[in-house]
Length: 92
Image (cartoon, rainbow, N blue to C red; front, side, top):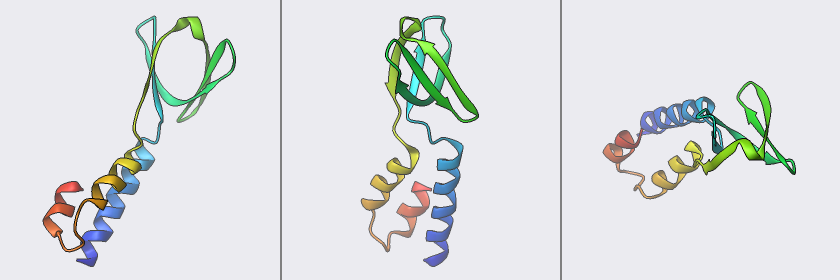
């Protein structure tokens, strides 16, 4: 069972490092950006994986919150029994 938990932890960390963004920003131009959104008055700063970009609010069509993969994992693993090896394997 210990190896199963180790494998699950490795997979969870891979998910978190691959995508730890909080929001999906849809621009009126059709472009989509994912990152942490910070309100800067008439502009929005979007912290991307490598840097950040500032966009005027009038160029934004919508902002969609995206659930953190680590939080999703924590919620789902909490629903499983410790001895449910198949459940933990399926979750990973």
